[in-house]
Length: 271
Picture (spheres, rainbow, N blue to C red):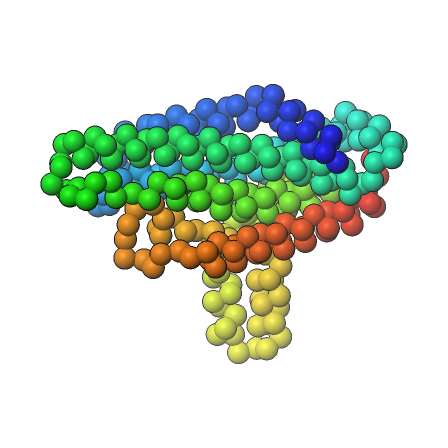
């Protein structure tokens, strides 16, 4: 399993797609100040923070779905999966190895973009402190460590997204179908809280039960949207260790669930 994960990671790093996504994301975060003209009232540091967090989510989601799909189907299309599975390698080891390799790749992406965002915020706050010293009587105000905490939380979410993409790939026959359906599921998960709020007002118990079941089947990605409560001091209550612990458990449960579902389908799949 470790060998499959390591080879998958190295293969993914060499892919042109990963380098392209990483370059664009880094360029956007570095150029966040240029987009300040589209700011409609938030402070500059808050705008740069939100812009960087948005770049992590947007490009990270693209990378999680596309990289996981490409890495899985490349083994199928090149017939190397047959060679691996002909050896004493279980299908579970194959799937988990591919997932871990892709997840490590996404982790590198999150770490790099978080580091760039940290540097941009540190530089920009220093420049503002030099220009407006009266606005910073107590020195720096940003919680810089939370930049990496946000990246870690998003990495957990991308793990669920990659597991969902792997689950869809386990019964899909084409790369394109897997990518498209995975993005649809991502949108559903982002808007899942709407269904969760709606089923509470449904009078029909059968329909309410169906909506409740679907709200459990699709993970609620709103719990990962913590950007407004991180880095920049505000009126929102501070995040606690219990919050991060709950997110970690939530991520592990759904990631393992979709990996097991992928295994069930992959065992029946003709290679």
